[in-house]
Image (cartoon, rainbow, N blue to C red; front, side):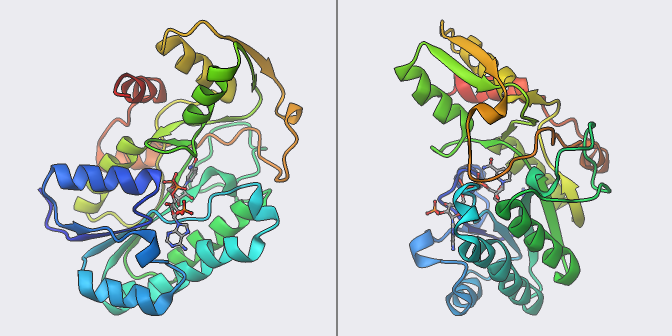
Amino acid sequence: MSRHTFLILGAEGQLGKAFKRFLASYDIAFSAPQEKNCDITDAYNLEKIVKRASPTVIINCAAYNAVDDAEEEKELAYMINYTAIENLIEICNLHQIKLIHYSTDYVFDGTKGNLYTEEDETAPLNVYGQSKLAGERIVVEKAHDFIVFRTSWVFGDGAQNFIYKLRQWAKRNKVLKISCDEVSVPTFVDDIVHVTLKATNKNLGGLFHLTNTGYASRYEWARHVINTLDMDHTIIPVPMNTFPCKARRPLFVPMSNESLSKELGIDIPHWKNSVKQYLLAL
Ligand SMILES: NC(=O)c1ccc[n+]([C@@H]2O[C@H](COP(=O)([O-])OP(=O)(O)OC[C@H]3O[C@@H](n4cnc5c(N)ncnc54)[C@H](OP(=O)(O)O)[C@@H]3O)[C@@H](O)[C@H]2O)c1
């Protein structure tokens, strides 16, 4: 199915786990070292791992994703989301390896009032978004062979996603307050994996938006989860500023996946269908 050999970095995260599951199920050659053996900020060790694995494609799922903590851990956020990426690019260029890297909708400030395309101006509101923007820029500038995918509201196997948190809150409360003015696109790791591998097999290059289709507020997303799971909770829509956070967040940042869909000749599933598929498999 694939002529490539993959190295997965950040293999214990939501997306990394989905890649491992998929590649193993199709008998595609890959290595996926655990984070304790493969800290991407350790350039020397990273190069040793790359040489040993001898991949044709590196899929970098590793990232510093703690949006609020990043306000106080700026240096660490930049070390993982920018400096480590610069080192990774050097290794990829030296060994003629294609680099697949992921960025975020938080590179935008949310003021456009319409779906964001790849041509839109970036203007991140928080340190996390700034560090991810620095990372994607260095890939675009320096990597010889790359794809950067901007994605959003990723959900899959893990505790650091909205569906997991919602189900935890729902265990303790019958009434849930969820923000209705924060809008983006819930995106399923399995869809990211399928589209990434399709793009890799087609030898695509460049920066693309990879989200599920459609968009939603957190409130609409929560209602869809509660309804799909046949739960009888009450959900109250509230403004995002009901929940004070350290990091500023953009309000309306859904991205259009049209450019990528056209390039690959595919329809990327609607977020509602993918959420349902994920929940029914739990
Ligand atoms: N999650 C979202 O909603 C979202 C939204 C937009 C974009 N994205 C992007 O999508 C990509 C995949 O995200 P995800 O949801 O799969 O994230 P995730 O579940 O947080 O996984 C990231 C993984 O990277 C690991 N990691 C952190 N620092 C590392 C280091 N120095 N060396 C090696 N590994 C390290 C983390 O380990 P620890 O857990 O031990 O730190 C974690 O296993 C990332 O680029 C992310 O920025 C995610």
